[in-house]
Image (cartoon, rainbow, N blue to C red; front, top):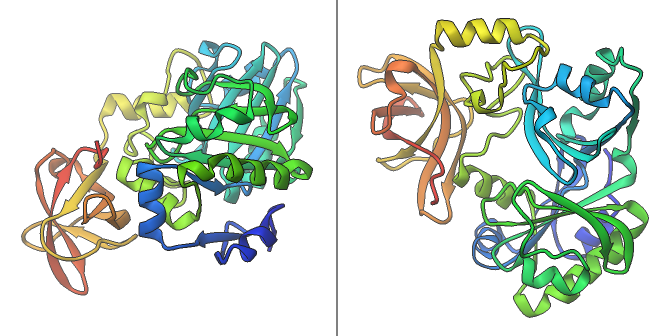
Length: 359
């Protein structure tokens, strides 16, 4: 199992460590509900250094990205970020990822930890363009500083103007005395905040500086447990749960980042699928009766007939009720539709709601 640069720091902070995507990761420190609340109302720090980072460089770098990505990266400009996915050849999804445009010939891709090798091999397979590819995942640390107080907590550490940074943009500058740090504003919590990319050798220095600067704002370390409850309250997909190699991106709600203005891997088949109309859909739901929906529980109709399955479910710390995501047949996908989750052979009532669950 791999460690991040700060594994010993997390253990010293009393984190409960668990294996995740081949890494030894902190799942919680003070408790999921407390950490969740910290991010929603204040500021917290996730060590997400397990994520993967690739640099694609060369005159044809954009051509390669256009071939493997569902989204239209020609719309990017320097300092702009784009969300998209890597379609496979059989109608599913290799991974979802972010593309950062550093300059006209240089792009920085951020991929999911569990898919680093898979994504690298997939993109390499299509690199007939002579693009210089570099996998910097093992030498890069990443901290997600999230919450409404994030900009105030971090501003003293950098010359980058954080409060005015647009969503899905980034800048490079000095951070905590370290030069050439990449700071972005994407977020996976819906609470606002920033991502700090640093070399492993600077990770401890930057981590310590963040906590020193954020002390007056009640900053806390946050584990992957709260990351999951926070992202689910926003209705954000998690690869491996809500989308995977077998799920249709169109059924998974990713039509908005599927651009048929260009050709890309499997685009003809996806276009045909769109024109024919999808048969099921990823929807949000909240429980009406008592019970927590979990991954892979069956979704049924009033007569007990299977109409779908749960992909993600939790007790929302903010709403104090159970929420989830799942695929259902089109006839049951409309907002307000009554559905039932099969929990221990009982049909527990729920209703379809449109994410985000927390507005």
